[in-house]
Image 1 (cartoon, protein in one colour):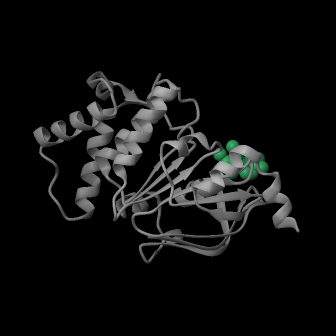
Image 2 (image 1 turned 90 degrees about the vertical axis):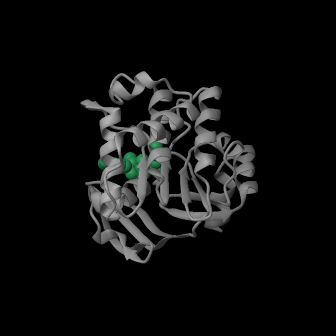
Length: 250
Ligand code: ADP
Ligand code: MG
Ligand code: MG
């Protein structure tokens, strides 16, 4: 699904990612953890194709295609969907409009007809209910005046409607109270399937009590210093990151 090889990237001339290697197979959920400033969001941004991040070395392939040759829209059409630490506000654009046009763009890329409105409404209402969101949500402008928890729910709602092949979620748990975290986790867990992959980027271990990753990677100073299963996340929760730092320096 996703293969990252020796990825180096700079932000404003400073090297932030210093040789990342990561392979995510279909059906797998991977978590990337790491201290503040390690480069987690930089990695997400590079995958998303955001401006301002320059890849200076290495490769990223998504389903066999060179991801670095694809623009943001190409990536979305190919089935890669991002939710973000600070989801953007789009003043004046209603949620429902964004969802529908994103879904239709995806269908168009697959050579399918636009989704009929009744079918779309049925789909969205079902997903809203699952995310415990009110239908009034659809008429609000994208993320405008949303609370932190509402933005996160909305991100997952988009994922549930668009059903990406690869879902990338950065700091999905930041600013969530315990109930919102459960709902968001349930949403993510319902996305799990044998042909979909999920990459969760998180500073904290706690979300991993709700979403069990197949692999956990600890990113320190622009490199994956250690990979393991969920036990690694638990050890990080107990002991922090310093031991990994020391072992990788030794
Ligand atoms: P994390 O998400 O792991 O906390 P980031 O990827 O956000 O880390 O940041 C990694 C490093 O890159 C930090 O030192 C940060 O200051 C720097 N950085 C990130 N984005 C920018 C930017 N737009 N301009 C300058 N420096 C940046
Ligand atoms: Mg940060
Ligand atoms: Mg970050």
